Length: 365
Image 1 (cartoon, rainbow, N blue to C red):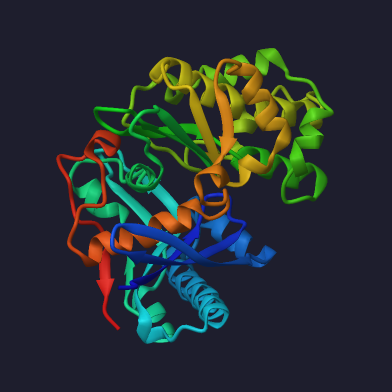
Image 2: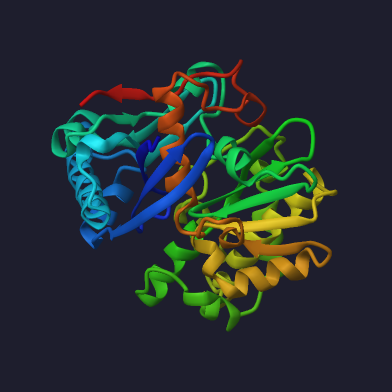
C-alpha cells in the first residue's frame, strides 16, 4: 500500500525551500519528486533580521511565518502537479520551518522555526506536522540534529561503519556503526559564514565550487584563533546556529587588514578542519564518508576534506540513493511519518534527551 508524504526543509543557509514527495510502502522508501523554490533577497534579509534582537520582533515573525507558509504551499502545489496526485492521497506534510533562533541550553531551552502550520493546512488541504525540535528540548535534549534517526533508517549498513556528513549552513555528522548507538552532533559552521562573507565582498550568494576561496590562502593565525572558540572542544551532545557563528563573531576575530579572499579561504578551511577533527577524534574507525547538503557541491571543500582524511573514502549520498540536495527534506517526511504513527523521532544518544519521544505538532486537514 502506498503512503505518500511530503517533506519540506528550509535550512540555515537561507537559500530557499527544498520539498520532496516520498512513498513509504511497507518497509521501503522511495523518493518520487522534488521541488526547489529560492528565497528572494527581501525574504532573506527579513529572516536574517530576526536572528538578533530588534524592534517589533513578534509582529515581524508572525508576518514572516505566514509568508513562508505561502511559499511552502507553493512548493507542495509544484509537487502535486508533477506527480498528478491529489491532496487527499498525501498522508501528511512534514515541515521543518525556518530556524531564526536556536537556544537549547538548559537556562533557555527553546528553538524557533517559523511556519504557520494551521495556515499551511488551510492552503494545501493536507495534514501538517511541524515544530519537531521543542519536544526533544523539553525532555532535556538539544532538539538537534534530528536527521540522524533518518540516516540510520535509510543509510546504515550491517557490515560497514558509515558517516553521513551534512554540510548546510551548519555542518553536522552522523555515525552509523555496525553495532551500538547511532550518534551525531553539529561540528560547527558549514556554508553559513562562507556564504555571508562572499555576499558581503562579492555580491554573490555563495562561492561557486569554492573558486574564490581557492584563489586565496589560509591565514594560519586567524584559523587557529577561530578554532580556539570553546564550542569546538565541547563534548557532544551539542548543536549550534547563527546565534553563535554569525558575521559579528567573525568580525570580532579579524584584525581588519586581511585580504577578503584569504578570509574566505580560511573560512573554508575552518569548515573542513572542524569536520575532519570530528571524524578523527570521535570516529577513528569509520572509513566511509558520505556528504550531503549544499557543501557537497563545493569541489574545493571536498578536495581539502579528502586531503585531511586521506585514508577515508568520501562520496556523496547520491551513491546511496538520495541526491545531496534532498536528504534533509526526505528526513522531515520520515519524521512526519513517525509522528503520525506515534513512533519516536529523536535519538537520545544524539540529542541528549531523557528518552525517546514522539516529536511534532499535528494540524489535521
